[in-house]
Length: 521
Image (cartoon, rainbow, N blue to C red):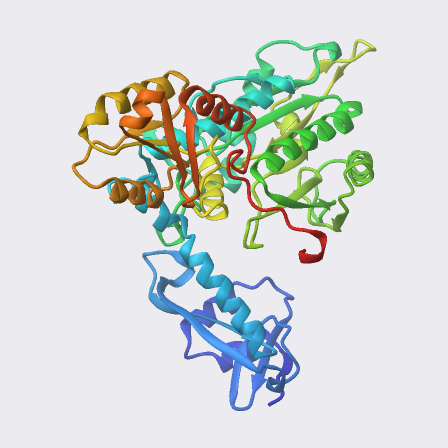
């Protein structure tokens, strides 16, 4: 059957769908002069922007994947609806491949693995706000420490700003007019206040607190501030869409001639962090949109600087980039960064954006080399994005089999019998002193059961001890993948595992994966 496209007037569309209040609302909400299109397939006709396949003969395989309850326009105060999800493919093999990928994704679902491994959970006492348990907080802190190390290396200054601001600040920044519906706001003593959904306005207040010379720039303010955004309850989704979160948010206040060097340094930091995490990425330049603010000259200069950075990056790293014309923010161009996990799924976490407008709104300035006041440029940038979202991505990327440096469960000591308990405690103390997350299984169960439980709990290394190991001051080493590595001295194990942890290796140094030869790749 052919799929036919038709363009209709607003009046014709309102008449055709007069019995459907939802479609009437959509049609009436379209701006004057909008093109309204329909698609017809046999007797079925509906509003649709398109495009579609030319005819149904191209669809050889399809599947209904999910149904769920929802609310009109994602608002719980509106009418309830049923949402139906489906996919189609030109042949059955592609559909099977898709279904296999989805099945694998379900096994890696961070919401399931988080509960199974006692990492984090959510509660109705605070919807959209994660409760990180001790194991989950260990992962959180390791990522935080990693980013802090990079901030030190790249010359960032860590700052702290309030969580709640008077609405005068949000009026100045423009959030009151454009973002208020996404903010938590309230009145105290007849004054309106808002919880911050982002850090940039507070950093503008910091910059404006004192006078700056051109020699002072760039100023790189980094903050791990707690942010709140009033997401609809129906849109909340595990750690990927929350109301309370923390970003590795930073803002660089710089001169126009420093844009290139600052963005290049940002990309280097991003490359080091994502390389350590084992995540692949793509880059795209988003340029001046319709309705942009500022002068064309500023935009041209900024886009030229970002283009030069991306060309240099492609030359040095061999990473091609693409162009997203007219897809920049209204206040400045940006580089969009897409990352891919182990299943090839893409996410956007990292971002770097130039902003000409916020410095003007806050009347920020520095004294240039001519002794004149000049407005700085703000570089908004994040690498992890929100730590909550990154932990969700990494949980699924690693299937909760964390590399040693990120693992909340690094070493489990398993005594063969009660006679080895004292030595097990001695080994535990040695690893604890070396700052490993180490536990000792003193349950009244067989050694085999304890080892299996530790493997299922994803402890990186299981160290079995008995009378023989006690006499030799050794441990018998197993991995979570059931590789038996034999007897090793306690000090040798601490040395090797310290190297694996401190170098942030993705694979075990004691049991690396087999190397593939060129023919098998």
